[in-house]
Length: 144
Image 1: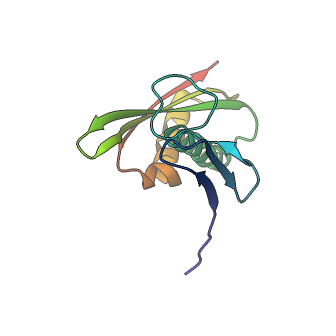
Image 2 (image 1 turned 90 degrees about the vertical axis):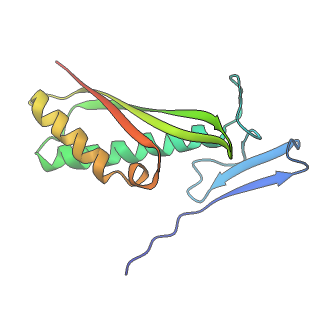
C-alpha cells in the first residue's frame, strides 16, 4: 500500500483564548499564520479552521476538475472554484453541515454537458469531498 503523509502544525500558547496561535504547513504555503480560537462571528484577519477546510476543498476540487478536463483533451481556459462551508451550532458544538462548491469556467471547445459531467466526476473523485461527512453540493457555470 502506498502512503503519503502531509503535515501542518499549530503553535498554541496560553488558554483557549490565548494570545498566540499560528499554523505552519510542511510546504511553507502557511508559515506562522495566525489562527483564531473558535468560530469567528465576524470578519477578522486570522484564519480559522472552517476557512482552512474551505481553502483545502476548493483546491482539491480544482485539481480533480483539471484532471477531468485534461482527460477530455482540454488544456486551455480557466475556472474559479469557491467552497462555502455552512456551519450550525449543534449539541456537540459547531458542525459543518454542508459545503457548496461554486465553479465558474471559461473553457473553449467544451459543451455545457461535457463541463457538467466533468464537474460531477471531479466532485466524486475530490479528496476533500470524499473526506467530509457533510453534504457537498455544487453549482457549475460555463461562460461562453
